[in-house]
Length: 197
Image 1 (cartoon, rainbow, N blue to C red):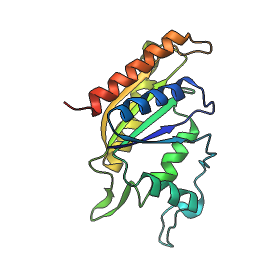
Image 2: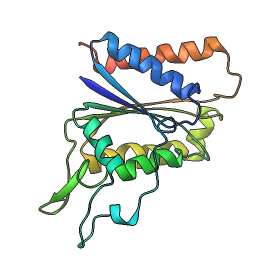
Image 3: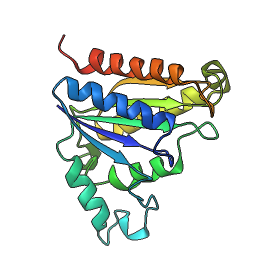
């Protein structure tokens, strides 16, 4: 099984980046392959250009998108790692999905509209916020993100959502033992979702 870990945080030592490292360790311990995609580290351009939008005049993805799609062609699990900023994912992640998970990769033209192209593959997400998880739920942000970034993306692409784990109250200076405990939770999730049953 191959996992693409898509990390959307500008700090390579951020909490969500630490979660991605724990995920990779757990997946590799199962004998799976991992591909780490640090969107900020690779300076991915999240801005969709006009000529990248499918139209009657034609469509051609840019070279950076072509190479990214080739890298992800055999991925079985897409694992997203991102913070909630203003109660939503970073624009970097949205831009990545717009450009890479667009027409020709995640969906294509079908008989009655768009047809999902990633059927049989999985989506799992790990998120963090400075506010407590309970507040994220009460504010409506949790339901909104689950609807737009889990259910809708999965439906358009044909992905199966396996889980979405959120960590609240993640603030600068968070204690190392708390980070380690959350990393262990990620490892357990990977083993439970993708290990032998």
